[in-house]
Length: 216
Ligand SMILES: C[S@@+](CC[C@H](N)C(=O)[O-])C[C@H]1O[C@@H](n2cnc3c(N)ncnc32)[C@H](O)[C@@H]1O
Image (cartoon, rainbow, N blue to C red; front, side, top):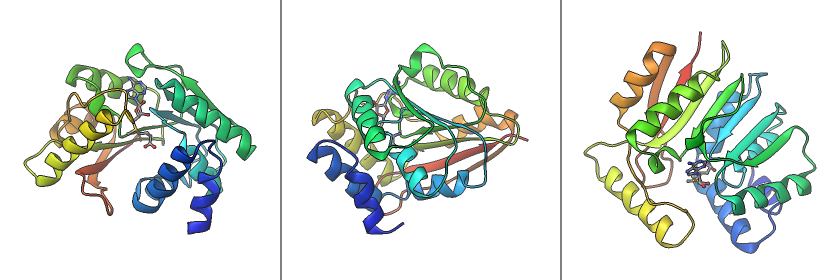
């Protein structure tokens, strides 16, 4: 996607702060391009847990991916911003709602994404959320997670520092609680399909990985 398209998505948002954040996030983070290629050939609806400003949804629309998308986040300010962007984009089949993922998940059958939010959950809450999410993946669908992985790397230490900074600057409502390891994902998700775990940090210094479970 071109720089022009990044600017187009950024301009959907009401405030300068969100616009600046969106443009720089799209420029530096390979997350959304990767999600677009994971989801491009799927006709299934998407449930995006911890959707934040709804960036994934607007990126997918810009890429011509028109499946229904439901975004949930417990930060009401971000949901309000995502809704304003939705009106500005005049996009169909998008919805953004205030919801705490620790309180269970709505009914859904399709693909599910959980991007950069697991660190706010305890180990037990992470396991519960992953089980609820995988139960909402349709046959042939995917659960796609990005998470910083707990390991011995310098990248992992920088990940923790970055999340603490996000809390200190009030960008995030919560400080990080627990980071899962690759072994955690393997033990929870392996019984449900084909699991792939690979680095997805792009130009960032963080220890982010992409975890994709494909249901048979
Ligand atoms: C780092 S941001 C990622 C936003 C989005 N997934 C993305 O990648 O563009 C993490 C998001 O998780 C949300 N979040 C954290 N805990 C949550 C919870 N218990 N329920 C719903 N959303 C939550 C935060 O409000 C924040 O918007």
